[in-house]
Amino acid sequence: MGQGSSGLHRLTHEIAKFGAVGAFGMVVNFAVSNALWHLTSLQAVRANVIATVVAIACNYIGFRYFTYRDRDKTDRTREMVLFLAFSAIGLVIENGILYAAIYGFGWDSAIERNVFKFLGIGIATLFRFWSYRTWVFRALPVAGPVGETTAEQDPEAAEEPVPAPAPPVRPRQRV
Image 1: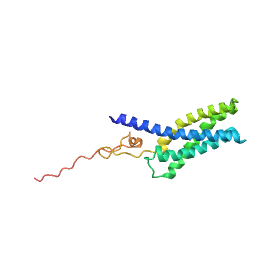
Image 2: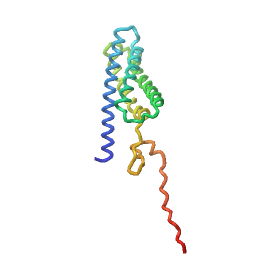
Image 3: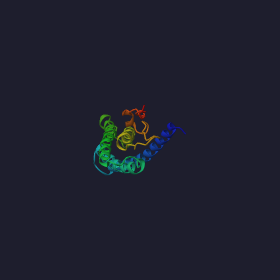
Image 4: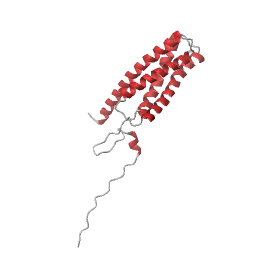
């Protein structure tokens, strides 16, 4: 098996684990939002923001300890700040779509809310997958055969020029 197929296997495995955590978060998100919509007098988007925040908290635990448990853990503060920032952007995407459906088009039935909630989660999930794997849960560099890191293993390694090795020094011969 070549390096390309190994990388594809790792990506497929990562997507499956991300999807499992995301599916659990989506169940939590839908359960909380529908409970709030039916049991409280909160406005639909406000209730949905609360549900999204609860799901984000559940997802962080799943991503850190399941999906990305093998990733760099050296700077948890940085990780948490980036996770919250990218999650907030995802929250805006998800709830912006719901807001547009309800207040822009008047689509406010229980089914319409759930359809546009699902659409918003789907679009936000694509953004979250890219941002979490790229910025939040960064891969640890893997040493190559001579202790080098390849661009596939660490994309930042490709940006740094690699100096050429110095030629061997020969001792001078005496005459």
